[in-house]
Image 1 (cartoon, rainbow, N blue to C red):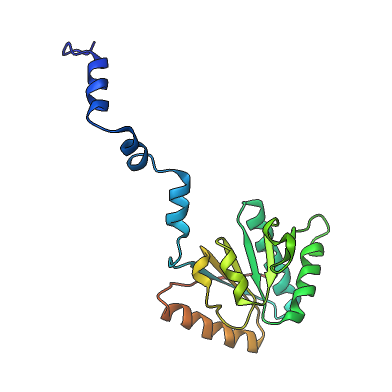
Image 2 (image 1 turned 90 degrees about the vertical axis):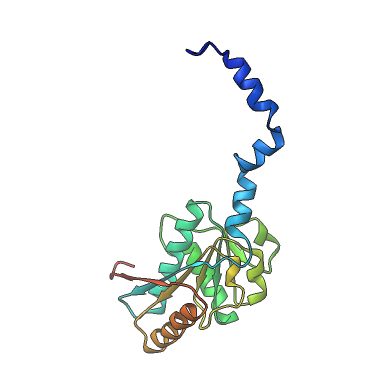
Length: 190
């Protein structure tokens, strides 16, 4: 009994008698699936981050991309590494196996049979971008058309004049698309 003398069971019955259970389930307690669909739905703008490395080495750029992929994998985030040329796929795959002595990142090329089973995929084709919804690590020269399939985009930039100029162009293009790219300077330890 409450202080006013009304039984709690009566309040409880009146509450549920005036509401349908399905309504309560879907309006007050949205499912994880519906939250995921809203969060990752096509057309949402991804969060874009530029990581500006102090080095000019392509190897340092690749290792930093591997570190990002490893961090995403450990946080259960599907990741796709987008490259400019088909010739870059094998070296990136090798680097994901050996960028540190004590770890590797499970990965496959996007066109392989294992692509759906691994946390990280690699390709240079924009067609493969439609299969993802997590992190895009863009090591390519241009912004892929299908980046809205991702929640985050990471651009890794080294101090090479050509890569810096292409990164500046992409930064402006992201802003022109209505995104707000962030940049973060990363020291020598990359």
